[in-house]
Every structure is written in C-alpha cells, then in structure tokens.
Length: 269
Ligand code: BGC
Image (cartoon, rainbow, N blue to C red; front, top):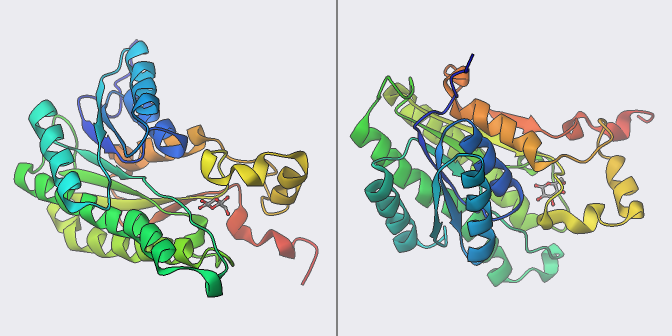
C-alpha cells in the first residue's frame, strides 16, 4: 500500500541548499513529495548535484542562484519560483555562515557579513514568502496552512559562544524574528517555527570533528555521544513543514543530542 507523502505537490524553497544541512533538508523534503528550489550563492555544481540526486529518486526541483542578503536577488528568486512552479508553500531559511573572531578584534565587515546573511537574509526571504502565502491563501488539498516557514537557528540562540559574537547575535535575532512573525501571521494560517541544531557534521564546523582529538572534545558537549548528521535535521524540517505539526507555532525545535542539557553539570556543581 502506498502511503501518502506528507508534502505531496508542495513547493519548497531551501536557501543555502548546495551543501550541509540545507542539502540534507532539500533531499528530505523532496522525499516527501515537495518540489524543491535549491538556492545557492556560489556553488552551482554542488547545487546541481543535489538536484540530480533528487531527480534520481523520482523527485523534482530547480536550482536558483541568489544571495539572501540582497533584496533584489531574493525578490527575483521568488518571482522565478512562482513563474516556474506556480506558488511557494514552504520556505526553509537555512543559508547561514560563521566569520569567527575574538570580539575585540572583530571587524565591522565580519559583523555585517554574518548579520546580513544569517538574519537579514531570513527577513528578506520570509517577507517574500509571506506575501505569496497571503496572496494564495489555504489550498486544502495541499495543506491546512497557507504556508510554512522553518528558520534554521542554532543552540546558540540561547547558549552564549565566546569568539562568535556575530553568529550568536544573529541566531538570537532569528529567534525573535521567528516568534514575532509566528504571532503576527498565525491568524492567517501561516506557521513559522525554527530548528535549533547542535553540532551537525557539515563544512561549517569541520574543525570540530575532523580529528579524533577534536571530536572527543566535542563529545564532552553532547550527552547523546555522537555528532548529528544532516538527516537528523531533515526529519525535523519535514515535520515542521507538514500538517503533522499543524498546531505548532513559534517554537524552536532543538535537535542537538542534548547539548542544551548543560552536560558540564553531569559530575559537577
Ligand atoms: C554552529 C556549529 C557548532 C554548533 C554547536 C552551530 O550553530 O554553526 O559550528 O558546532 O552550533 O556549537
């Protein structure tokens, strides 16, 4: 018996989907029947490869280049998606990066670059998505919601992180952006939630898992005693984007192997 796929015929945009968590989320949404726009900023080959993998398993999608911190490029990405697929049902605000520096040495450029992509990018993409959700309204055959937004946050929306002030500030900002628009648009049947990943094996943190020494250090922060994989986040994204979470508004779903359980207190305090 064929089970109904949870995101059948829905159109999803996943930003920063050419690698890491974004690529994992794009594949997970496609496996549940969504047509996925694989947004990328600088790696067309990697984005095409993600699309090929999706097509190889019977899925469908499109790659679109856009810098999420650039208003014009974001507006064009939504226009292109809507003219190709007709609408947008799901936005996964995933694009994000780190430019780490000691706070007293952090340049304004490093600060603005990270805030521009991690926070302003989520503002610009969410605004375009919500305009389209409001225009179209609910299509009951596809979803109970007029649209869903999943923001990629981090455990660092709550855990302070020395040497990463720009990144932590951006994720704290994402938390209040997410909650505020969740409150503002819930009455219009638009659901906005976040995923807060812990340490996931991706290029952003390769230094933390690359060598056995680094990996063992990292495990001290993770009660579940393993690093996360992109698939761990893919499953959470499918749930937040599907009607299975229809009564869930404005939460951060932490997927972190217990990083937020203060493992330093296991045998201390
Ligand atoms: C960061 C990773 C880090 C993880 C846990 C993420 O948000 O991007 O570099 O490993 O948080 O600290």
